[in-house]
Image 1 (cartoon, rainbow, N blue to C red):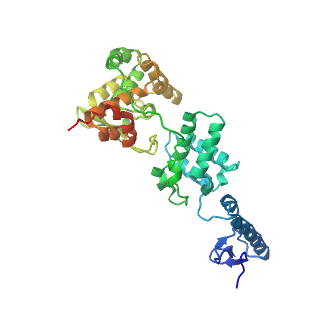
Image 2: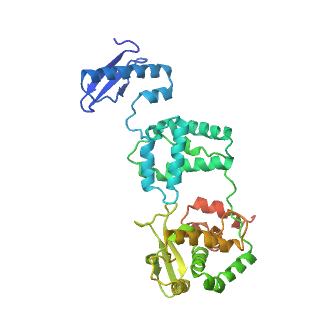
Length: 364
């Protein structure tokens, strides 16, 4: 009869690994040693590993146990980030991956964050301890919340399909940690008189002074495109359906991925698109012609912002207000579902932005 705490090691040929068993409370669980040398030296190394395991099991310290036991199947944090960088949203994956790496490094205390097992850090306890450390270090609530959202973005529930070949710990509790109450995201529409004045200035005057910024304005105002989408928009994505209607095919392509992984087709007035063609020509591959990538970025981010801020000086969104105005118009005309489809965003996000515009229910 085996004694409590008795250790034995066995070579499992099918696994090409030394396994050990430890007698504990009438049970003999088996664990991989991670030692693959079928030699006398290999067996000695496996026995030494088994003794470390026994000490960790007796201590009931899960972190100590995780450091000793080779956990076949649990992914390393580096593996997770590699897949996220390959399949994640183009616009934000670099920043999210960087913040995820910082989280793992700080939460685990390990400089080589890539080798940290996901089961050791992707827990609600580890995340809460990390948040508390951030707060004690004087980081603002909004900054901490932004960091938490970036970390969770890497292993978001909607993204689990890209990790289907990896074994991750149960993340249900981890996903619930928010990093603080989110601010009110509801959109307050710009005064109609301001919008009318801005539209007037964006017709003939802006077309004459800066036709490329003029085109940027109307693509954001009437199609709800993001700044980065206007920058990337190509003529081959523009589909004329008939004399009155065109569509912007914002679909997944080899040379473009959307910011949030959502795609769709956005209706656009054919007459306005022909005016853009006439003003800018079709010699360029891109709808907004450019002399360089920097030139394109400046046009679609800085110069369009400068124009909009003449009318909407407050706030941090600048030209992004044009997309928000497009969304509010669609919500009022067609409802949340259609707005989510045309904005290529989740219903939840669109509702949070525009629920204040919805008509309040009437009493019976």
